[in-house]
Amino acid sequence: MTNLQIAKVLRAVAAALGLSEEDNKFRVLAYERAADAIEHASSETKDLWDDGKLKELPGIGENLTAHLDELFRTGKVKHFETILKKFPEAMFELMEVPGIGPKNALKLSKALGITRAHGAIAKLEKAVKSGKIAPIAGFGGESQAKIGQGVKEYQGRSKRLLLPVATAIADAVIEWMQKIPQVKRIDTLGSLRRQASTVGDIDLTVATDKPELVIDHFVKYPKKTRIIEAGDHSASLILPNDYQVDLMVQPVAAYGALLQHFTGSKFHNIKLREYAIKKGYSLSEYGIKVKGKTIQFADEQSFYKFLDLDWIPPELREGENEIDLAKIGLLPQLVEQKDIKGDLQIHSDIDIEPSHDLGTSSLSELAEAAHQLGYEYIGVTEHNPSVSTHSKQQVIDLVKKKTDIVHKFNSSEKRVHIFNGLEIDIQPDGTRALPDEALELLDYACVSIHSSFRGSRTEMTKRVLAGLDHPKVKFWAHPTARLLQEREGIEVDWEQIFDFCTKHNKWLEIDGWPNRLDLPDTLAKAAVSAGVKLVVDTDSHAADQLEYMRFGISVARRGWATKADVVNTLSLDRIRSLIQ
DNA sequence: GCCGTTTTCGGCCCGACTGTTTTCAGTCG
Image 1 (cartoon, chains in turn green, blue):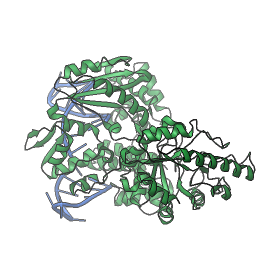
Image 2 (cartoon, helix red, strand yellow; image 1 turned 90 degrees about the vertical axis):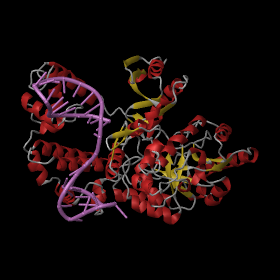
Image 3 (tube, rainbow, N blue to C red; image 1 turned 60 degrees about the horizontal axis):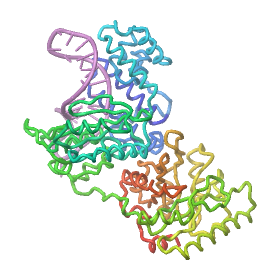
Image 4 (cartoon, chains in turn green, blue; image 1 turned 180 degrees about the vertical axis):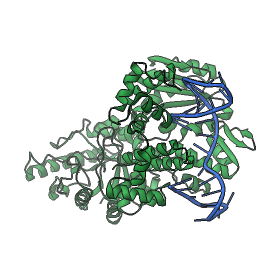
């Protein structure tokens, strides 16, 4: 069972408990929090259970540990079944529709005679269309329409945007807004500001003392396709591709609390409010309430300072232990893009007849782009020559040819040093798709998985460790091999991988390619805390893609990485000595 | 059902919006 499936079960139990009047609402809350914790866990719950570490999850105590134990051993939990069987299965399915909670799901299920989970939402949709919802007690015409809208949303959901897409849209709107002087500050909000790898909504906020002028300018945004609404303090636009952008406007003097509140995350805010209560304060988007009086804050720094906390970078606001560390001044100094001195995974157009796609930019174009970014070095890492269509000697010759090209280029290019690298497939049996004689010609190589993703945890771990086991191999590229919104990552024993990396000086990549962002943030955090060094790069196949570094950096920051955790913050001399 | 620099008992985040009520319940973020 995946984390998502387990979370769904726990939410169903929470809903069922909430409807059983004798149960107190805090047990319901506990189940909801456990569901949240599991959904946000950095490891599969099943793996934690395997290792006897279930209790490390916040919100999982003695009872839930026992229940989950039963779930993994037998596939079901008697206690849960007793609770759930009092209600029609369909109820839990209907709750998936936005706007329908436990109470209404139960009412609808009973009134419409929908009992089975399978097809429940389709039946609900039918009921909406035939007007059978409006007459139900407690509902009405508008509720019926709202449910119809909710069903539509449910059907079209999972339309989260990739971070780079959301960033591009937001950047363009921000540029437009900054054309008028009444915009004193403008920020993104929510998961975009926290730089999550996928983003739900594009929300922006502006600090101004002329709200009407700001809203008026916003709705004149040239790329809009239509205005959804434009009020006194907020407005929403639809852009091409049905992307929605929401804007909130706030007086300069009260901007800080609003920015803090809508940046979230929900989990961070809950913990922050619990912390504030102990000090006798109550937090909201309007400020901090002390003895019934709300104090305003112009910026987040003063908001956090009032609570005796260091300012917490948005990337860290996920409700882990960031508040505890902010209290004692021990938050990490996160790596920044300006710390980066080079990019070690780039595909040039040197045609070595590779197994996968070739880059499109020449060495001089790549060097120029790297120079513009202020880099001291880059590494070109084309895919290894295809092994199925070449003899061993042909492969060696191709790598030799490339090596000569790179060396010759370096003798004339003085601004940016180019390392002679390669990205090598780790084949299903763990061997590298490159003879060792060819490997010896390189400055370094990275290894990665491009096929046979579905091996067991044990097999895949063995495969990867075998692939990494050569002195010329410096790092494992896009480790999980996930493709966002397309393919789940592979399963390996991360502890074993981290252990191998720290012992043998191997690095793990954070690949900044838009739909990879791999390592994922949670694993990057685990790697950092295990002491594994990271290399943040772009996997560029063209010179303009070197810009993707900012997204790799976002992941590294969400992984709590400091400059010292990222090897390509090192100068050319230092990185050269590490590679050789 | 969870959890602990006030506690192994007694607490558990906060406010907005919506639609149906006839003063508020349900849902959401």
